Amino acid sequence: MEPLKLSFLLMTVALREIKAGIHSLRYFQTSMSQPGLTKPRFISVGYVDDEAFVRFDSYSAGLREEPMVMWLDKSNQNYWERNSRVIRETELTFQVGLQNLQKYYNQSEGVHTYQRLVGCEVTYDGMFKRGFEQFAYNGHDYISLDPTTLSWTAAEPMAVNSKLKWEAERSIAQRQKAYLEDKCVYWLLKYLEYGKEKLLRAAPPSVRITHHTHPDGKVTLQCRAQDFYPAEISLTWLRDGEEQHQDTEFIETRPAGDGTFQKWAAVGVTSGQEGRYTCQVLHKGLPEPLTLKWEPESSSPWIIVGVLAVVVLLISIIAGFIIWRRKKTSSVQDWKGVIRRRHYGDSEILLDFPMEIFFFSKWKRRGLCSYRWQ
Image: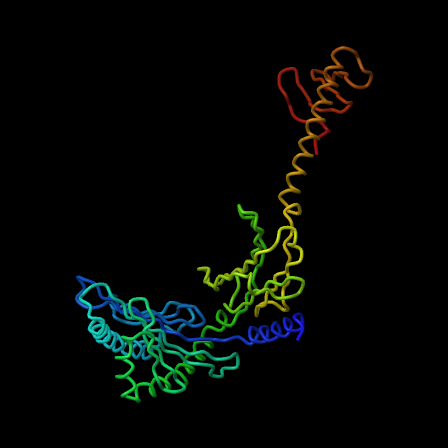
């Protein structure tokens, strides 16, 4: 298949996936031990489509799960009591798990973390896509569940201990599979309905291309997208319509802190060849793919403003010089119709160029005459 046709095919597939959208419900939980603590501190945060919506902290006064968004119903006491009870039970299992891991690794007391990421994803029409559950110890992958085979994958040798123990009780994996495919999906769809005005919105990205010249003479073009929601986005660099893979560097999509996301893609180019490159952006908030090229700085509005400022300054200097010359000349000779004085009672009017500028009394200035500067 020709490169251009292949690129178009890939773009069509990516656009279809982005337009369709993927929604997720995830819980990120951490148990942390350190010297001086009577028990490990446990924190759990729930996310819907990358937005934190509930939080539990074992060091909080109420020992309850708390809402973090306005769209979540805060008056349903049964919901909060049930979730708080479940999360406190989870805290206890994490305490035991942390103690076991320290034994497996033959470690004494100190700062240790035991973490879990669990959740599910659905397609735009609410169909289950996948479920996941994975654990980490002291910042490194430890073990993860394969819901299809109901088996556990050890990420390092010490995790074989947990693998053998959990696979010996097959009901553990079966319960998790049921949760991921049923209950998790049920609550995800409920949360999407509760927060649909915010969670189902589509804010298009603002995109710009910047040009960077390195000390060694190499040139990089950077395609920056920001202010977009949801997080799914595709940034692709093309040269003469052909997608660039090897020379492109990406930074993963990251939250901007205001409910939107940002991402960039950079490509190394040969100086003078920048015009051959285009950045193509696909996002749910865009009615169609967006294609941009780098524009040289000479077209920058700041340069135009600077030129206008210089022109205005030159005009001011020339006008001032003309006025000064005319006033100086008027003191040497009497120009008819240019400088004259007229008396009206106890007042006089000074006419210049020949326009009435100021209106004077013998003792004080009374105001402007009929002519005013525009």
